[in-house]
Image (tube, rainbow, N blue to C red; front, side):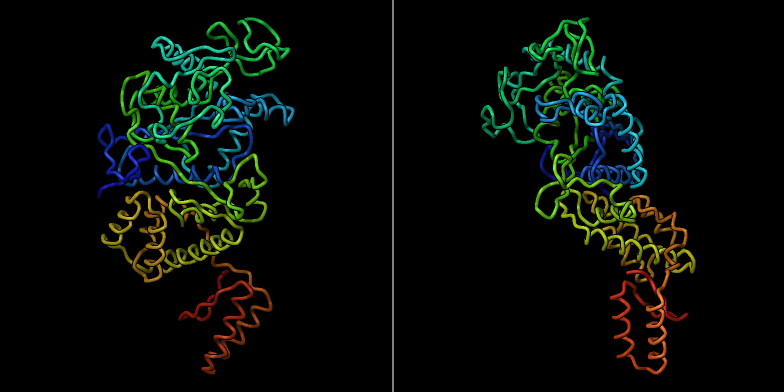
Length: 473
């Protein structure tokens, strides 16, 4: 069955065909580890995990590389402002290295909580400084860079297709609309390597070997103390681990106009190979009630720990995400998340019934229908609906559920039976006893009224051959 994926590069869904038979090179932009990831960030990583699981479902051997940005990402995202790592260090009174290590580990804990598969290769920017220096030097040798008083910049006018990923070639950008021009020759030009500021702050450049830098992360290169620009790390590290051309590059939708656009420009200029990446895939924003996307700079910054403190299972958040396509904006509310948690608990209960009673069956048509959903650009909402309908109609067995969950990643193989053990308050138990008596007297109107009362108290009642069964709503 054909796997079709939406390609940001071509602006359409395409049949996926890897460069090497049965093998996939996948690069996903990882976190900038100066603070906790918020749940909007984590939506992107869940989408990328689904992609990897779908590739594996289709029998591909996936070489998945994810970077950790621990230097060079400036607060402006466009060559100005503070380095986010240095800012995080100042905020917490720690070194930039300590900040990077702490938040990288917290991000990995988030991945475990959300059942996100670890990449084949983790790569930190600070572990690949020489590769980045070599990359910048190679671009300089090609005559596509220039120096300013604060660094080395890529001259975007040296290539004829800059901005093709984001359709920037059809936009007239004037100085000041995206960034402060400073000494840039052109509005879209971007930093490859930045000079460290001097101790007194008056002279941006500082000869190699001099003392007194205000930065904690800096290296000798190009005759100065300095540090890499944000974009260069992904190009250098992806080439090291995946080669000069590979299959899929992913990230959030906000990476399209700047970060990924600049990655393409510098890499294709260096290698001369187009396209550098065959498929570009991007996840949409998580939107708050006020219509804003979630951001670390705003007051709508919610971490996975916040959910855990509210006794919300992180996998309920994963379930919430899977109900909407990754390319659609998703509105977040606590009410919607609580509804998702209730839905996941109901699913747990149904799956436990399949396991304990060995009911349901398996058929090739159902498997084909599931494959059709997930192979249609990762239609997790359709796949979930198919699974739930099959369970309701006893059209699926436990083993098949687990096969489907290898894609969905909801941990359905790890349910310990807790969904069956519902603590029933005394008030609810009394209503159940009254309802049982009403049913015995065949007073079904009263029975339905009592069911509604029970539901308002947070419980569902199901009539089975063994009597009333109660579950959390």
